[in-house]
Image (cartoon, rainbow, N blue to C red; front, side):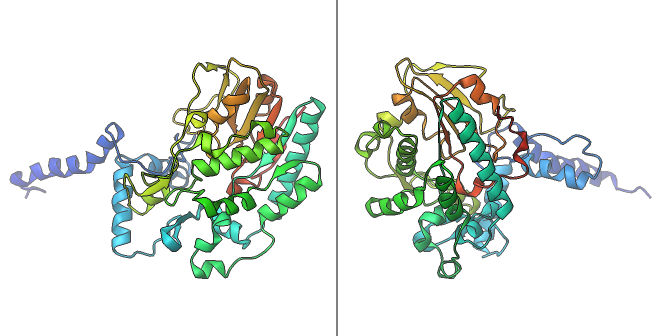
Length: 368
């Protein structure tokens, strides 16, 4: 007797074709999804393949955005308790809880060794840069829950403990001679006049970014570089939902609010790219560095930051700098030779709060 009757054998092809449908998503447009954190197949993946290869597959399968959105929508409909890196607070505010950001802001964790590494790195940066005549300042964009604790669920508000890692850094670095701007009080006060963070996104909004930039300029001793809100921002306007909403399967063209950018925050015209100064990045790396000359007088400003400055500050920097650059901090493991190549007059170190600690040993920084 044959294993499959002839009239059933065609079902094999149909079944295989159905299984192969997701491969089309590797070459076709897809819905937006969280950033792929694993971009390449690890070497020797066949050794302990489930440990080494699974993260790559989970980040790069076809129609990833579509499936993640559908799964999030289903989980929300079924009121699933499956863990997602978001917390829905009061007034619909969504908070990012990945990377232990919630526990960090509440003071439920305090990683002493990592905070000490940060202090060591910033001490060395300050001293080496000062010896070269370079101004050094540090600002830390807070986690959303550090600025909006009143919008956390009631149970989370009762969990607040002190000191937090941000508290420690804000007290320690200025006492050791490092110019530091604690952005939490200013951003908290600014909420009385309007939002400073997106409701559905990990990031601050354009108003929060402007406040952070102005604080960085003051910390660097250049208060004259501050830009008023009236010059940089328009009135509060509906805007599409952000990255945190996608975890919940929500998308809307008018589901959030932000301030439209005006000239000082828009891309500056006639910038001259300075190739070869920033580290080379792999394909699809969202944190590609940049460097430009503006064509007018001013200091050379280098920002070592992350997504809270990468796309928010270029126009602001271009207004008063003769040249400006940006590179990712890589949790204190940025490429120090960037400073040698760019030759800045001012260096701003600006890691978001959840990346404030130095992961692993900072010994890779060759500060000379």
